[in-house]
Amino acid sequence: MDGANGTAVTEFILLGFSYLGAYQSALFWGVLFVYLVTLLGNSLIITLTLLDPALSTPMYFFLRHLSTIEILYTTTIVPRMLTDLLFSHPAMSPASCFSQMYFFALFGIAECCLLTAMAYDRYAAICQPLHYAMLMNRHVCVGMVGASYLMGIITGTMHSIFIFTLPFHGTKIVHHFLCDILPVLGVASGDTFSGMVVDLIVTLLFIMTPFALIVFSYVRILITILGVSSAQGRQKVFSTCSSHLLVVTLFFGTGTIAYMRPGANVTQDMDQILSLFYTVLTPMLNPFIYTLRNKEVIGALRRKVTEHL
Image (tube, rainbow, N blue to C red; front, side, top):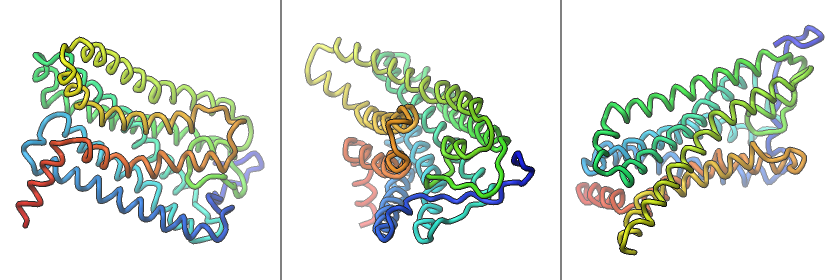
């Protein structure tokens, strides 16, 4: 990471929410509360799906890994963010910035791919019920989860190595609360056009392609639902995938707004607020969506509570 003047970058200063001044303390406690709820909620889902035999289906196998990714995803960002909120203009070493960018991309892409696998699971269950056991056997499920992590590893490696081979020199001020790709790319020295092109290609391949596959799965599911004769039957079929559909809308909706919007129309402060939604708030909401809207998870929770009373 040598700059054009031969001086290697020594540190990145993340401005984060320093513009809030004294209000950073309130944001600290708010983010801490959300983070603790995220850890508790997702840990509860992991525990329930491991211990309750009724939750041993492929859907809950995927849900367990989704909760695991949510914990790792937020832990990559939030502890450092909480520390930064307590200090003015905190510095981050290039190695720390590289690590955060790598794991942020890894778990973010892994979640995209895993949500796609969950959509296919719902498609197989609703549109191909007679072949479901064969289509979603144990080996297939493990392979899908493994492929999700592998895609995350490949993308994280490509992004991070490419960005940090660009020239940096001196102390770099990043107008963000994490070492995300675009903010760091914006402070690189020299021509960064190729970096923006690579970022766009990877976004289209590993974010928009999974989203397109999810949309295709739900179009097929919708066609099948409309073919069900009774209104009660249609409602029952739709309820099996409504939680996943809501999670997909939250994750891809906020992520698309943050990464695909015209940069000229969004200020740096607004960009951080958008990022706050999909990096901090959405992982907290997912456990509530899957518990409050899922009778099987609620039933498993009641059984475990009853066992320990």
